[in-house]
Amino acid sequence: MAEVKTIEACIQGRVQGVSFRAWTQVEAQGRGLAGWVRNEADGSVLAHLEGPAPDVDAMLAELHKGPPAAVVREVTVTDARPEAATHFDIRQ
Image 1 (tube, rainbow, N blue to C red):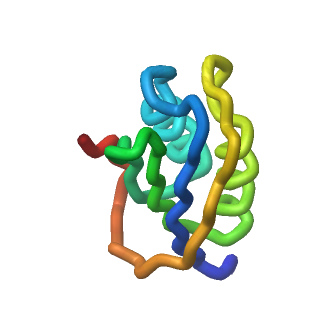
Image 2 (tube, rainbow, N blue to C red):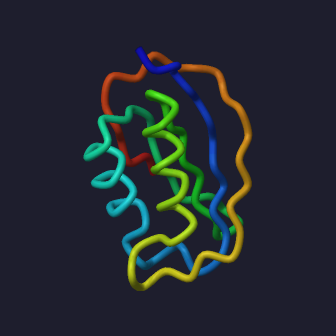
C-alpha cells in the first residue's frame, strides 16, 4: 500500500481566469485524489492534495504545466495536515 501524502501547492503565474481550478479538479479526480483548489487574493491558485504519494507527485508534475491557457511561473509546495477529505472540491 502506497504512503499517503498531503501537500499544499501555491501556483503562480497566469493561473486565474484560465479554468485552472476546473482543470485541477478533473486532473485530481482522475488520479483518485482528495482535497480542494481555490483562487487566492494575490492572483495565485492554492491546491490541497491528499492521496497516495505517487499520485500526488504525478499531480504536482501536472500543476507545473497547467491547462492550455495558463502560464505557470512557479509552484511552491509545502507539507500539509490531512483533512480526511473524501473528494476534490473547488472552493471560492
